[in-house]
Image (cartoon, rainbow, N blue to C red; front, side, top):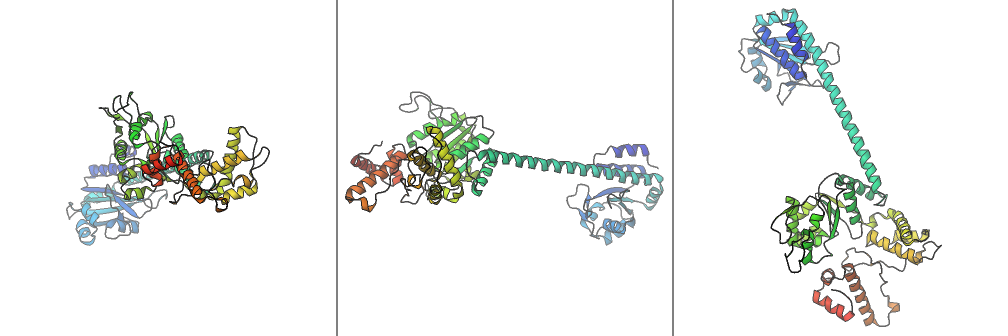
Length: 517
């Protein structure tokens, strides 16, 4: 029986890929010549491995425990009986291929080569049948035409696949370049708000851009005054939620009894004094970003409720019987070492890991001193614009002093110092070192960095003291007053910060005639 050339050609030409081409060619040979078994093995692009249909493990071309390697290395067809093949060639994959075939059959292995020499070898065609059937097949002129057509189509499908792969790689490369250019552009735009050309600030801006591309919760960690609020707003501006609201809450500035209501909201009559229902900040931030500053000061009971909101996306206002959906992106910030608070049992570890899906650490000003000239100049310009003052400059000596100074309050402290210097500099003059010396750096006894208050006074020095008891009283009043000012007059928070019992602080406020509540 001869091959039906037209039907065979149509079936093979319509093949979408090399695998389908081989399957259709093998089926045509079986039908036309009553062959017992036909298989087509594809050689990989490196010419080192042959793939058997859907098998996951290829056959190495330098492994002579299977007959295909012998045919490829000889560059010519080989024929052997299945009995000899089973006894002499023990490759597991080959043995599995021919395990069900009768041992008296003969096996013809024919390497396939591209006619135009574009590739050295394409693969292997394996045929099993009686000696007479194989001889008749090989003597058929139609079989020679079949092999030629198979190789030509094989080369065409391979080239098509290579072209598609090249196009896919080109698209991926262009996408990568476009993404890189877009990220660089966004990072450069951030430089107008998050000032600084130091390597740590450049890296931070790049991380902000990448964080904004995701919906992950972001945990901002860094010392007080390092700019966590600005970073949170930048994340919101660059995110897909930029058109939604940005809601900020300082967890340390609100008494514990009011924090839950402020965050979750309440219905009318939920507690004494709840004359009206309130949506709460979770509801106000719907579709946007919620920024929780000083998350380390959040009470443990509220931490558990916040964790549930992050995991389920739902919350319940105080006194309400129905849950509401929270569609928001959470950004949290803290200057406290949360790992230590976790060890102390004051912060939940599960909440920490849920908040820190994309952690960002803001560098302190002492690690980016090269940015101080740019920051100082920007603060001077901002002061002149706000106060409608003539342009001011910084003398080299003043700039040198700013760069050498310590900043426990980081960028916020630098701004306070520059604002003060601008205010005391006479019109038409540049800022001199003498304008910067009236505000001395303030360090806390605990060693934790804190911001320098805007109206800070110099510590008394021994040569100006005539009454030690009064000097100590004044200095104690100065520290307590600064702390109360920082926490909005809240004595509970101030006492906690100073490590005093609340009653003790209240007594000192009374004795020193200090305000507070």
